[in-house]
Each structure stands twice: as C-alpha cells, then as structure tokens.
Image (cartoon, rainbow, N blue to C red; front, side, top):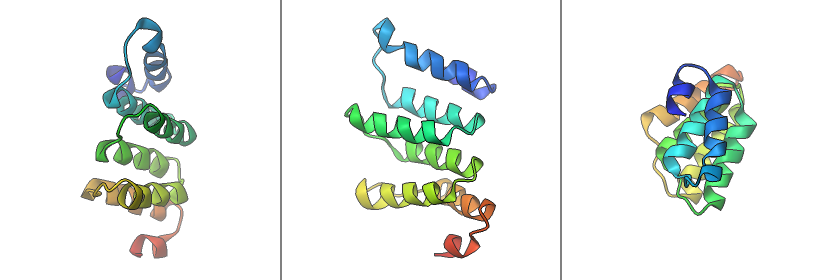
Length: 121
C-alpha cells in the first residue's frame, strides 16, 4: 500500500488497506498512516479525517506522524480550518507535541486559505 501511495496510486493504496481485515491482517497505525498519506495525493481530506477517527475508534493511538499526515492532506486540499483544528486537537486533547513539519503544514494551509493572520496566532 505504501508503494502505491508513493507513486500516486492513492485509490489502489486505500483498496489494499481496506482489504487487509478481510484477509486476516490487523490494521495498525502504520496502515492508517499509509492510508492517510495516500489521501494527500488525491486531496481526499474528508477521508483522511475519517481514517483518523477510525484509528481512535479501533483503540489505536495516532502519533505525531499521523497528525502530520492528516494536516498535510488538509493543507494540500486548502482546508485551513481543519488543519488548525487538528493542530489544536493533537496538542490539547491528545498531548502530542507538534514538530516543525506539522506547524509548517498548518501555516501553509493558512497561507493557501489567505488566512495569514491565523498563521501568526
């Protein structure tokens, strides 16, 4: 699935991941991270957010990498509000410390949405 996502076959990557439970393969955070990253190529921000929620519902613990990927999907999809929401969620609700890459993606999302004032907040 990761190889598919890297070369732009995001739909195929998501199909592979979706078929894993049917084949008796348990989904882990690596699977969810790969799926969320695949969503970036297709600008599928709603699907990325649904996958993040599904990871939590599956009793998995999304990491900084997971949130970074989801914020990057929002940034590429011009969804600055969702990017900022995820940034706040990871810090306040999940206790994760955002790294420079995460903050940069959130700032870039604000810039693409012409919300530079929010990027400075």
